[in-house]
Image 1 (cartoon, helix red, strand yellow):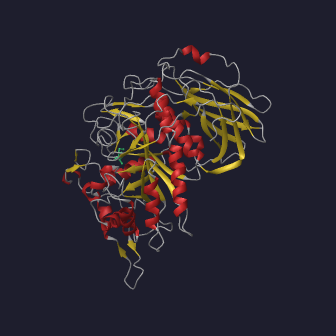
Image 2: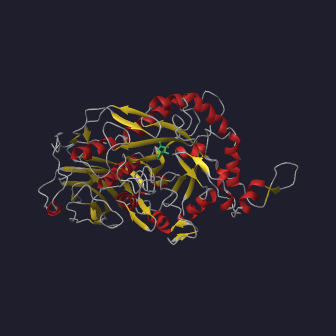
Image 3: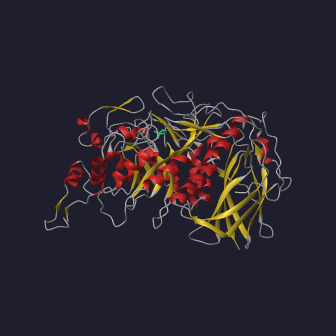
Length: 567
Ligand code: AHR
């Protein structure tokens, strides 16, 4: 994305003293002129935007599963078979395409058999994150969660502490058909014993899980492996697995922490060092944005100033570099004849330090403000701009955790500003991404003087500081149902400055437009249990297109979705 095309780069000098509170009068401020341009280029298609980039992730961590997703069938809290109703409804409201489980780091010490059978007979186990797991929420409860939402399950397997046999038997348990299965030999057709066990546990019909993570963060909590060791494990785990569907299972290999390109290069070299064909659909990428410019998983979710705001969004924008770096690295080591491996960004979001958790037992829970809404828009726009590369993504994590869409505690519940952005970006699902040029003065990152901490739970590294944040960024797509209908999403990160842009579609004229905007006078604005609707989107104030072009003012610190209809 080009930051400036028509305008000379000028620092907007929105540095240290950026206002924490803005007067609401700023929203009614009339636009004085055009200070940015957005040129949509329909003749430059990027790819179909995979509906699976709007995915979600849950693991047994703090209040995510117990009290978040799972309240139990006997709870006075509204539920469907024990699953919190408001969780189901919210995931439906964003048309969640997939849900990843059981981890995260939790996955690599989790035994899927522990969560099967009579609830009161399941073993309580010591689990990752210094927790105990009653195993009340197990494989069937997870599948029922996905069914209730209407989304696909994405299972992460335990590669660190269970052998390959458990991996393929978990596949067999999930996917073997009910009834008699042809033996493909001289023996008669017969029922599969794991399918029978699944039926005895309440689900006769297969779960048909096609997306499988082969381990998680194997460089860290998933085994402290080096790429060559992990590649050998991946080859062994995937060399043979049961197959019941015409399409091959989609295996996702553990990718880098942050932007560790060395991991990806060495992994791919090693994966293909054995000449057998590899069954690899995607490379998992985890990129978190720390709440602090100098330390990983630090900083306050609620208490931040303008410098922190710009710095965090600048570091979030590095996702673009992470995507392109690893795409290039995979391309260099790709095997001829092997389908192009896609990127699966299955953990992303802003990760803050302690201080805004719902309660002492809600490890890693954090509040979520307008700042996080902008991060969400910036990230989804990056995935959409790279629709040819990013096939799947999952925000970490759906409820009561890092970068959540929902916060819940007993009978209290609220959605966060991030939820609204997911909803506002729905028109891009399955649409044709096309290139769009954004020309706007960039913002100088006031804190770009230290290496950027990157990492996950068990490993941290750093990237060199980034000095500029795009003054306006976004993405464009053409509706699959109507070639004259375009969706344009735009983030204006200026804390106190509206940006007026002239929007044009090359070779075509805009006839009409509608819009939705998420903007608040205070960048700290958030929802809580007492004020669950404090932050919500509004209908955007539109002007009429003139000469086939639209002039639109994007309010300060806002996320906007525009629907453009061509003549
Ligand atoms: O999402 C929290 C943790 O972050 C996950 O368990 C792990 O994969 C990552 O380090």
